[in-house]
Length: 225
Image (cartoon, rainbow, N blue to C red):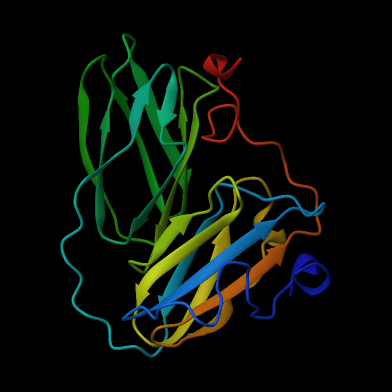
């Protein structure tokens, strides 16, 4: 088990502020996750996914085609989460050509996209993290996180996210961040969802996180100055 998980994880389920006992019950259960850095500050843009372990899975609806844009010499979004089987198109909105590639085991490709053109959608069938780059513009970087569940989201600026509308049962909850090595990510945890209740998990990294990429949603852009 990673050192961070043993030493810094606040791994027990606990009540977070804002979830008083008298609140109106929802028809299904929720999972709220909060991620902190080693100084206790919130960590945004952490991928959180919950895979049902014993709930009867309903047939998945066909996922809409997602988009990984290229605009202003950056991928948009910086982190895209999709379920297995999702197709992703690659539109180039820039006035220059891009050469998009991935050497990741979950999906490998290498293609050029002319200005104002869109590359045909690619299907992502294997769970894992697909790191994108551009052979022409080295600063371009993005991640496609493919998860084998329809229940996923990213933490916000407060380091929290809530997965809603979950059927009662056990779920394997995992997190991923581009700001720390895979070996220092915590093991998945099992969380029981009860109808009408909110189960919570708070985790704190023990290791120092890498700074966010300049094209990250939570990094400062020129328009913020």
